[in-house]
Structures are given as structure tokens and as C-alpha cells.
Image (cartoon, rainbow, N blue to C red; front, side, top):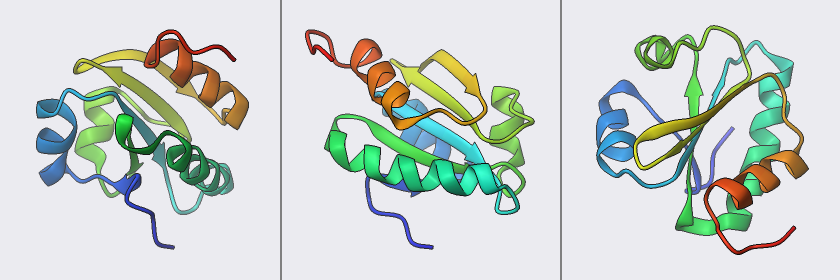
Length: 116
């Protein structure tokens, strides 16, 4: 499966540069190839990431391939979504999240003065 530029895979080598140093709003979705819920979450996040363009960075993190990142965030189950703002974790949600809730979370966390 290929990922559009707005929703891209992150690795331990690109994590520091693209997530920590950038300090842009970022959403990290932890998943695994063997997880059906992760596959559904990826598909949904691809669509949501296209709606918000480049104002928010969307990253896919493979729980098993990128275990250093997973351990850094304390993520041990999939899917898990981490919302970051100004280099800090503002929320961590375990399990599948419907697109409507993701959009609401983005609007209330990152995009002030936007109504649902």
C-alpha cells in the first residue's frame, strides 16, 4: 500500500527531524500489518489527512518495525493515536477512533475558531 504525502511512514531515523524538531502539529498513528483495525484506521487517516492539507503532519508508525518510537511513547497496542502540539503530547487514544471524532479532535486541538 502506498501513502500520500500527507500521511507518511515515520522511522527512527526521520522521527527526530520530522516530528520533534519541526514542532508542527502532528498526529502519529501506531499500527501493525497483522491488525485489521490498523488497516481500517490507516485508510480513514489517509482521507482525513487530505482534508487538512499541510497544516498538520500525519504519520504512520509500524509498532513492530519502529519499536524505539513505540517504546518512547509507551505504545504497546494497536491502533493507538498520539496527538502532538508544540513538541508535546496533548492526547493519546488507544483503539479505533471514528473519522468524525478525529476531525473534532483536530479542530479543537489544532485549529482554533473553527466550528463543527
